[in-house]
Amino acid sequence: MKVSGMLEGKIAIVTGGTRGIGYEIVKKFLEAGAKVALFGSRQETVEKALGQIKEKIPEAEVMGLYPALEEYNEVEKAIQEVQESFGQIDILVNNAGISARESIYEYSPEEFDKIMTLNVNAVFHCIRAAVPFMKTQGGGSIINMSSMVSIYGQPAGCGYPASKFAVNGLTKSLARELGKDQIRVNAVAPGVTRTDMVAALPPEMVQRISTTIPLGRVGEPEEVANAVLFLASDLASYVTGAILSVDGATQV
Image 1 (cartoon, rainbow, N blue to C red):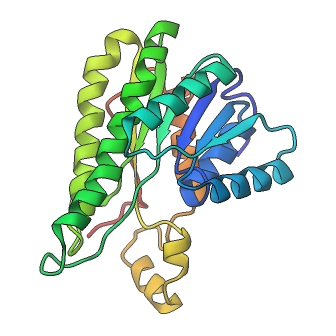
Image 2: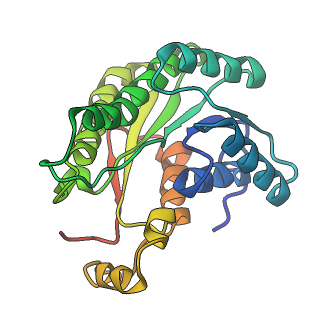
């Protein structure tokens, strides 16, 4: 897919940008002409991702930071640093998150709090810190990472779908609140995607999962990144408050 120039002159922040879907989003944005700040959880993973990107795209204008997204003060400081380095913030992708598969009988309150903190509170922190800059410059685009389980639920690990239901609520509500400031807010809801977690599954399990998907296969991280690119770009200039499913029409 040719994307050159789609985000020319834009500045983007991508949380959880060191691997998987987030890493593909960073690459896609850079190929589309954006300057990107990727956020990761640790210095070593951020530096590794930056090195890999520079090998693939030597001309890339990219920086890496590793704020604790659970701490608003750290997020605010990091986003201020991006603003000072690049001069503006046009796009925010809230991709960082964790999953859960525990049964309710083994699910500790601490683990539930942990997933809500990173999957919901951190999303709020990033949005709260970024929108004043977007408002001042006349607009922006926010894309939150949801999941197909925000629509269907899942048979265990209730904290994960609960957190993604909350992300959908943030997305819908903030789209209405921030529209007057020309800030669009959307979400992408991936289905089963070939990330590290899926790659670690036995092939027969992946095949069994694939038979439940009308397209007959799991998704690729680049396909999710393409959807995020669309929502970030001017092609989606009248799209806000949408939860875009990228799941091959999965039925569960």
